Length: 559
Image (cartoon, rainbow, N blue to C red; front, side, top):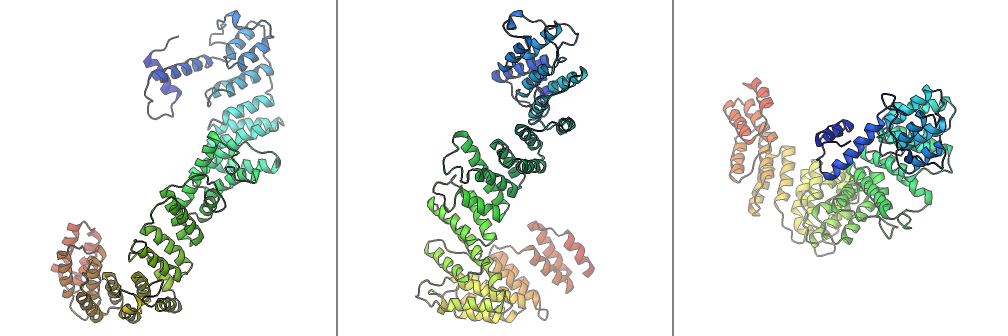
């Protein structure tokens, strides 16, 4: 039978309905599809005869004359040839009787097929032998489970297990493996885990095939179940009481599979900020105690692990990641230091934060105002912690090593502002020449103070700070104008028109006011009965792309 292109394409779509897109047909794929089509067409007939009941033509030379009929079928099957044709001929001619042994061979041949292509035929054979009152053997059921390990057909899997249980057949170790693989294929990972645990309890001295562990770990990682996936990988590790890559016991393709699994575990756990699994996977694959790491982590993976360490305050892990980063001769960026500072902050290690800020500037990576922002709430948590941080600044006068960085002073000032202690924050600003060798404030220095004034509604102090800023030749930025506008709005006893003066200056300097501050200004105008000014602000917000529908609805009650 020679199949035309259109027929092959049609058969291909029928035989593989789960494929959403058609695979481009080329010469090699045509040969493969034609081969599968012929095999499936021949096997889709009734099990041991064709649909009409006639004998399927067979050349007698295909049957070995030196073997019994049953052995002929068995030998054909072991040669990876088609045993169904010979079995059909021998049964129909009366040379071979139907028997459990014959069906064992045929279903065994189905189980050897790639994927689950002969699953339907195998169950057709099962039903046929039952129709002839032949009782399936344990081997038949195990071969069916082997077939089902490559199929998501959980209904038939449960049917086979129930029939085995009814006939008191015990699952062999390979049967347990195929059942577990079937659950994994069907993404029933909880059931697969349960079966693995039950197997280990019943057979503590028998190891499951490592392929089961790999497949289960892969499925768990893809589902984000990193704790269970790590336990599975550790199970493989504990079998030999050594890391499998240290002794070079696994090589070639297997080693690459394990590496990929461990890499994906570390990538997934760090992306989910799962501290415990990330820490253990890092140290087991890369960190301390391993002279030959399993793989070299990429820049992105190192950064994910570093962020996980920072979030959970794991200074040791953060420093380990940066050591690997330095060993790759990669430059440290501001965000690397910021993550390390966050780890220090969560452990209340303020002195280390100050030292890191100094080291950043010495390394040519000037810290930003936000670099140590995660430490502000830690220092501001109590009056004692804020005083302790200020004392650390005072203990390092200019000229001593390590020098105090300006951002360390900003950190203490921000903490006092968060505590609504603007007086102490202003005192620290006045002591700036004593604390920092260069002793010159920058725009961020004044913004911190203006933020405190806005919080405490101290307009007079804010205007004084603005004049100091002008005298020091520091140019205002968007935050400067925003804090000044908020100060003007907070003072209910004075006119709000000063806020419009700062808004116009802000626009002339090329800065854009934030949506919330725009809303506060429009609300103040509406409360004062200045509907024209309020509508002007809302129109500006529309032009900037800010959402104003809810704001307009809320402000209507003041009209």
